[in-house]
Length: 150
Image (spheres, rainbow, N blue to C red):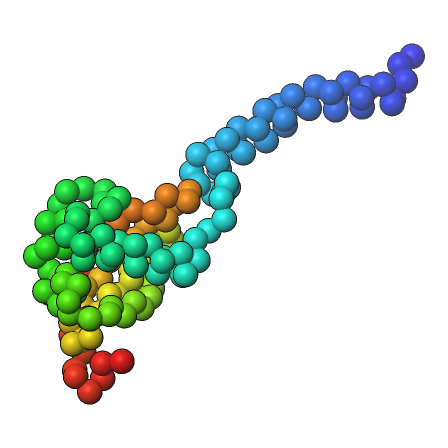
C-alpha cells in the first residue's frame, strides 16, 4: 500500500512546473507592458527641469533637443510667440499643465506651460519614460492679461 503523503508530494511536484511557468510568463508580460517599472516615475520637478533645458536651447537659436519628430520643431516655430522664443524678451515662467491625457493610457506625458513676461505662452508635451525625456508635442495656450501676468 502507498503512503498518502507520497501521493500528495507527487501532485505538488507535478503542478509546480506549470505554476512556475505561468508566474514567469506573467512577470515577463507585465514587464513588457510597462506595468513593472524599472526606474522611478518622473516627478513634476523633472518635467519642469527638462522644459527649462529645452527653452534654453531654443532661445539660443538651436533646435528643440530630444524632439521625437522634426514636425515638433515645425509646430513649435509656428505656435510659439516671438516673446517665448526670443531671449531678449525676459525671463520665462514655467507651470505644470497636468497630464496630457488625464486618466488615459499615457501617464508618462505631462504638459508644461511656458510663458513670457508679456503673458504669451506655449505648451510643451513632455514624455519621461524609463528616465528618457522627450518632447512629444506642442500646443497653444491662451495669453494671460497684463494685470494677471506674474
